[in-house]
Length: 142
Ligand SMILES: [Zn+2]
Picture (cartoon, rainbow, N blue to C red):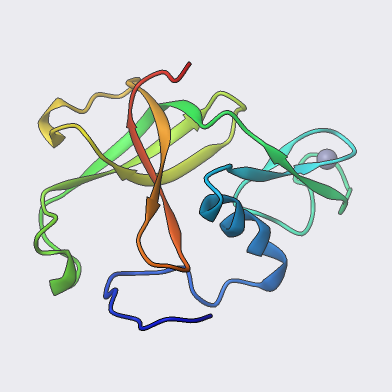
């Protein structure tokens, strides 16, 4: 893609082209997740084949962006120097209301206040011109 790459943290570069619609939906701040058109099962992360039925057919379906914390990890040691200003920060595994789990950075709450079961909503993290990453913040949406 384009632009000066001054962002020094991890980006999901090198993803297969067929998974690109997911990342484009994040950039558009309108997340869409792969869903089996035969049985309706969501596939996240994207997969070439349904794990519940034999179908390879899928669509990119809008989802609520709402969920609750399944588990979390507080990062206290920066994985690279670029993350040093961020620590401590929290990575959450979120069970979405649609039933699949997503992983992202939790924003807007002190790591010591995080609890399993806390309601969260997706927060779009526009980290570069080309990339929006998955974040969450406390809240139950609308
Ligand atoms: Zn299926």
